[in-house]
Image 1 (cartoon, helix red, strand yellow):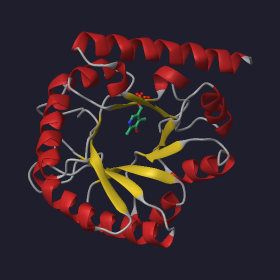
Image 2 (image 1 turned 180 degrees about the vertical axis):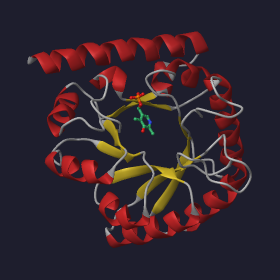
Image 3 (image 1 turned 180 degrees about the horizontal axis):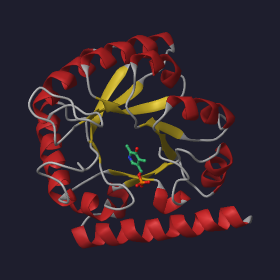
Length: 239
Ligand SMILES: *Cc1c(COP(=O)(O)O)cnc(C)c1O
């Protein structure tokens, strides 16, 4: 094994231990939580090593970085999640590789995703990104719809051709009432998910938690954690 592969294997093992311990502490089965490795800013060669180490779910937040990586890794058995703020002019490209878009936060984006999913003859999973710090009717700074906008967006996705409503996603707010209260933020997301599932029982995904706060997310009921730094290392630049 190369040094890099050994490093990634060791990091994955540590993250796996953390997830397993968090599941045990919460009385949850380990298979209730899926690890998604966020490979943003890291090269396709790392994605390939991760796939060799058994990773099947990867995430990216910028189309200009993700698109060429997905092409280089097209032979690998990976599902690509798009987790960044998405402009409608990038949607055609994203529809070429993403199995899921976790950052759906406005009706116009739903329209664009639907059109491109149909054109590409693919079904794309959609998570509604919830901005827990946004006021009624607003979008958050880092993307996401305010909690009171979730129901309307869910209906739009459910009615859109080529799209599948899979659940909700959040990034713990850096400011506002949830600042420093990741666990409370993720519990609020879980409540929003419960309401959503009452109307759309198949929308079971709750994507929450990153390297620093995955334990809080697992405790609060997340089904998917998105981990970058703890697997790949501290990113060389902001991504
Ligand atoms: C970068 C990123 C992550 C991973 O963050 P780490 O702190 O590196 O684990 C998770 N979710 C989103 C939306 C991201 O952009």
